[in-house]
Length: 212
View (cartoon, rainbow, N blue to C red):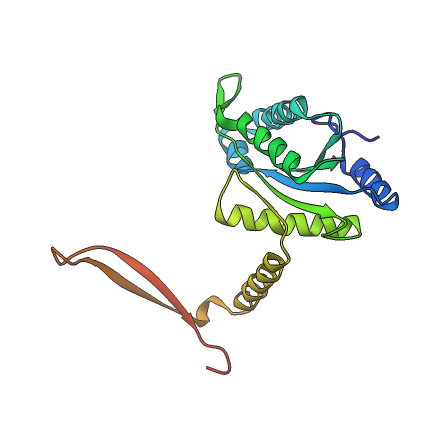
């Protein structure tokens, strides 16, 4: 079965089949990896049934505006992917922007009203990878960067971002190796200079490794 049961759009199995065939045929294409922002909050607020209905409606709205040369897939959970065949970079940008305008208005299901946005990371075959797994990885890395800095946005993969994100991940893994008891926490007052009144506090954490 090539279709996602919940949304009716193409599934991951079909994504791999289509993507690997394009690579085998050496057909240039763009791959976009996207996610719905704040979907967990929507499920928590409205419940599972409404959440599922919203996912289905989002899928329908996106699928409705896509040209025939763009294939749309449910990757899983809140994640989607698109393959842009025979498309220039400018066309990809226009389609992604058109998708984003869908969410200028609230999504309404029964009495539930949800503010939704989507973010995308985009990679290109063959310049960003010669295997589908690498294209997915690079688009996903780019999506992570987009979501870290802004929502309802998109970005094309850059090798410099790949290196920076991997550095950040290594740093996060290093920090995670310490126990909570090894951290020292300091509260620093924020003082309004004109009135000399404390208006808040900033928190600073320090940890020392074996090298000090």
